[in-house]
Length: 143
Image (tube, rainbow, N blue to C red; front, top):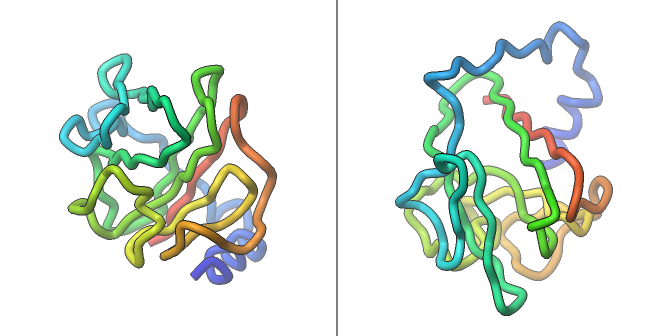
């Protein structure tokens, strides 16, 4: 799966990645019913952060599902980002939100340590640069 996504980006020409902007009424936010314990929303669920005492993973699911087309969104890390994030997609909205979605067969993620994760909570192939307290991570899903 990762090799397929990676090859799409390497072989893509600019017009193929031309994305129409998300309309305001379709803006992505976090689903208030799909937040793991300790995840706190801000600004109408457009931002979230995990208030934690220990190094744990929790999941949050967006309010919009994708079934077709090219979909793009960004995750912006700030000073509240205490630990590395796992960012990606899941094909299942109903799972234990107090676990990382990518620990399961239905989850695919980029892990802020510079790794890809799928169906594992312990390992994944090296990919990209580390991502923690600052930066913007663009996510593109080509259905």
